[in-house]
Amino acid sequence: MADELVSPATLLYFLDMIGVIACAIAGTLLAQHKGFDISGCILVSMVNAIGGGTLRDMALDRHPLFWMTDLNYVIVITITSVVIQVFFHLYHKIDNALNLFDAIGLAAFSVIGFKVALAQDVSPLIAVMMGVWTSIVGGLMRDIICNELPLVLQREIYITASVAGSVTYLLLDHFGMDAGVNEFIMLGVIFAVRMLALRFDWHLPSIRLVK
Amino acid sequence: MADELVSPATLLYFLDMIGVIACAIAGTLLAQHKGFDISGCILVSMVNAIGGGTLRDMALDRHPLFWMTDLNYVIVITITSVVIQVFFHLYHKIDNALNLFDAIGLAAFSVIGFKVALAQDVSPLIAVMMGVWTSIVGGLMRDIICNELPLVLQREIYITASVAGSVTYLLLDHFGMDAGVNEFIMLGVIFAVRMLALRFDWHLPSIRLVK
Amino acid sequence: MADELVSPATLLYFLDMIGVIACAIAGTLLAQHKGFDISGCILVSMVNAIGGGTLRDMALDRHPLFWMTDLNYVIVITITSVVIQVFFHLYHKIDNALNLFDAIGLAAFSVIGFKVALAQDVSPLIAVMMGVWTSIVGGLMRDIICNELPLVLQREIYITASVAGSVTYLLLDHFGMDAGVNEFIMLGVIFAVRMLALRFDWHLPSIRLVK
Image: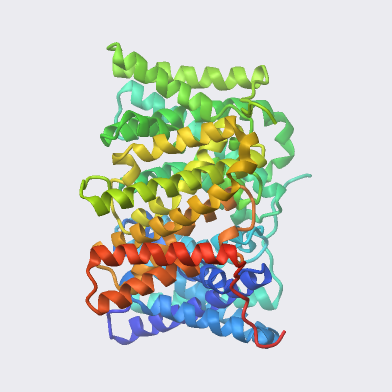
């Protein structure tokens, strides 16, 4: 993910790191709330930030795992977590920024998971699932460890935004869109859907004909 | 699992799908009860139906994962979950059918996990464990995600039924039983033990000499 | 891990088994407390004792998994769990022994995970993480299954002791210490830190400048 120096890959890597930072912050805040100690908070922030990608790569048999060859992930997460633990009292001021970072992360993680899966020659349906997997499994594992009902499965537009982006990519690809441009359209769609859902308080309903 | 067209394999595949449907229904019902949205319910039903087999194949280093090459799994689960979400109000009418489906799934999943492990040349003891693993880990993960104490670990005859079937297979195999026939005897034993346990309310005790 | 007959490897294997027994006891006791049945208790004790090493080997792509080739693990865990279930009433008498066993296990698991990772040519930072991973993920998974807030992430000196041992190893290695000797220094450091933390009730603080 980090090896190319050409511009689109670099930008995606940069957005990926923003997502990693957002996840590290979210994980640390919940872990602190649960009374975990310094190292416990770091561990939860790691699970939140790289747990989804780790499980994805294990499922796709991609070895070595990305964070074993690119140490930036582990270093960035550890520093972010420690900084947040020290300056926890500034939390209220970072709330809005966190939502923004989180939406960037959702978009970047989805695109990366989707691309990685396509590169392994799986069916498009599986690639859509891997985009979702990469972007939500980390948060799912964070909530499981912290003994909370997973936020991403509740009435929040996470999975839906990721799927919307992947489906847009597949449709445009069908009509011959250039892959590099398409990738950024996918990024934009996911980011937009998530931010609009936050701003206008959109929720996916539970469907049920009668109660 | 799906490639052979000969009758026993086809039948096992059919029973496998019944198990998958049972797990998808059970996962969806619990997820709805927890207030998850449409996509959250689908995710929990996937974990319930194919989570055990996924982790088994990752542990045995069998790649690509079965549901990545045979899309029927993901499609059947998604359709089942959506149908159940729409017709949730019919739940009471499907309760008994669900128990039946669930027992079929327990038997089919155990046989598949056991066979897959033996084909990887592991020891019989490990094959017995892989039968159990395939049949219960999905339900275990469903309950973990839904923040419930796992049902399969409580006083229900799930693990025991799976082990009884595997041990029967190994014993009969020792006495020269044909593998194809033996497989169906194993299926029958697991199904029978589970259904009898349900009907006569059998429970495995906690063992303790004195309190 | 078990193949060499030379003394240091044999000793490490012996300490590893003590750790496995400690984890099997701890897992069984919690599972009994939660009302799980015989097979449920065995399953939790397996997760506690070999879950961390299993996930580590899956992450490092080391196959077959260690407990699939060396059946001693599964057999020792099963026997330990059944014995504890039968003699649960003796629990109070084994409490102190359990802490001792647990500290031995923490040290042995950390050294094994650290060594295994180094042998896979990963960066030292990742090796330190793998030592932590091997020694705490089993307990983490036990608490997740039992619907408890993970003990190892709370203010207990587990992760810290493991990291202290790994860092000591790396420092001494830098100054040319023989690997065989160094391994036992690492074992000793982890064991000492954990036992001292227990005896003097050391806890890692939560860090926060102001509330």
